Image 1 (spheres, rainbow, N blue to C red):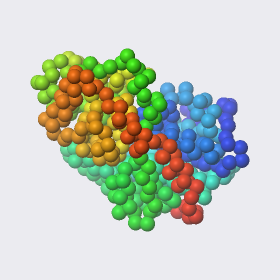
Image 2: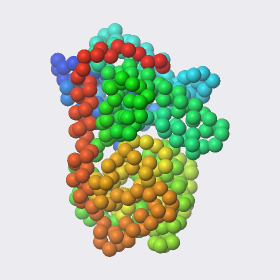
Image 3: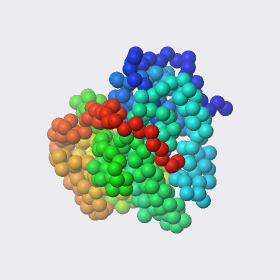
Image 4: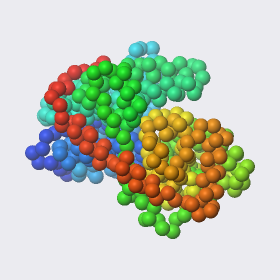
Length: 422
């Protein structure tokens, strides 16, 4: 089986005469249909306006192959390396007795290193951008004038959260990974010319760990044209449905819907007996699918367009106890003028004070009360918060993320030729 998806016969284009840039991602940065893909796609497209971009990434879902021709039309070259999740997990576990991060071991790939070596022999890059810490070792292996790392979130903090929420021996494994990855994040930040994070709190944390590193805040954005409720004038909430939207094979999302279903929804139903719960997202885990057996609970799986399903609900819930950063699910609901209830953890990277319809609660009772208040308001006709969109345009514009990245890639005098241990 080939380790390279061959796209050499697909027409490619670039910005003629422009500098060249290599963009590395741990997952195919297209289509922009889930959190990390939305951000990574926005990043390379912002760069493609000024650079001849080569995209190199892992492809963990063979079905994504249908998108390769479209990608190849927008950039100079596409390098797609298949990744078998089962083999990757074995590599990760084998790293446990060593001092290496399990995440770095998961994405260790001789085929990608070989392809990058071949690329170096025939092409020079002015800049390299690595999307996520796991792509940092590859970026540091390619000579370039500038190197930028987009960590998005501090994944080490995520593993620490997982450790707190788990029992031995899994908690020990997660805590070990948190420690190893935290050390690597600091090393990588010092080796790159600039490192991006989505929230000010995490940027401050990384600056403390990596003195001297240039750490920038580049928040996620939201597409207000696409997420415009006026496109669906006939779609209204029913005053009883709450909705959660996200990739349903992701641990923090699984934990969120289980917690809502088990501990919050019963309290909501004491006050609104016909309250319903809709779970929208691809690849629902087995424990999520089981929730669909509960009366009034719907598990949709992947859908082509989430907007009607969100707009036909009356409250978007994001009961996130795990995970970090700026959740796209919250921004998207706010863009659709929906009321939102989340936790302190879900709101940590957001400026929710600017959004009248947003509520924050951390106990099942308080969360349920916030949901009930908004469901009742929806029944009384207060279903939408159009002011959300004005606040989003001011605080969360994708154009600002692109500007920060382009400036980071193009500014400064440091050669960025350092390396971090991998």
